[in-house]
Structure formats: C-alpha cells, structure tokens
Length: 184
Image: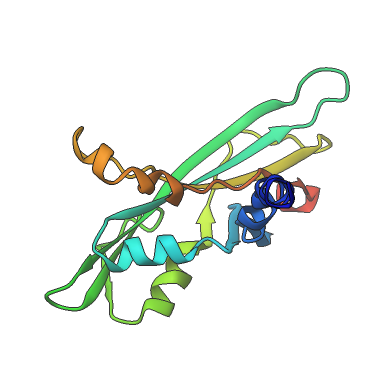
C-alpha cells in the first residue's frame, strides 16, 4: 500500500519537475523607429537538447514576434507578424558548430565554443520589425514566442528515436505594452 501511495505522489509531482526548467522570454527591449526588438530565451537548452545538438542533430528554434492593436471591446487586431529561425548543426570532423540566424540574412557562423552557441541560439538582438501602420494615440502590444522545431526523421526512425519528442519546447507568449514614443 505504501508503494502505491509513493507511486501516485511521484506521478503527480513529475510534471512539476519537468516544468522546473521551463523556457521563458526575458530581457525584452524595443527601440525607436525603425522598431528593433531584442530579447533572450531563458532555459532554452535542457540537458537533452544539449546532447542532441552535440550528437550532430540539426536543431532549430523558431521565433515569432507580433504587434497587436489593443481593442477594449473587440478582440485585438494583428497589425504585424514576423517569424525567423536560428539553426545549429554540429560538424564532428571539424569539431565546430555552424549557426544560421535568419534575421541577419548573413552567411552561417562557425563556432567552437558551446557556450557561445547557446548564447547565439537563444538571443535575438536588434531584429527590425516594420509594422505597416501604427497610429499615434492607439494602444499596441508586443507579443513574442519561441519554440523548438520538431526534429523530423524518416518514418521508421521515428520508432527507434521516439525519445526525440521530449526535446521539444515552447514558451508562453510574452506580452508587453508597446510604448507610444517608439512609434510616434
């Protein structure tokens, strides 16, 4: 009976342990026109994700940035949406990581230091967002979300590497008011 009670409590507390390292958006800043957004994803790299990257599995983080016009009575109106991706691939022969940052449009960066890889993959700095029309006197909010691209393997490998589903992460939407001085 004691073992059954311990098992029930262990299963009940397991989600708390899993959520302990939940990824979140932090350090958000917005500069004046043209609007540029910077932010960081805290706890984006779990041990499993680190091991997957170091094993050579290409890993991508998707970032979504939205600006919505705040309406009091009606649902908020989306005035702009931007999506971009950070991808890392490990080359074991050269012992280096190749990182592609979509928002920069530049060539991939090659790095040997895994700490720097984690910093680049989980940070976005000075991403230009250009909403079509922000009207002075209106209220707007900035929404940011990050998620890991699911690792897609050939059909039969999905059964062998079933644990890869555990590597996915997704943050909640980080919502903050957009100060009017940034678009007036």
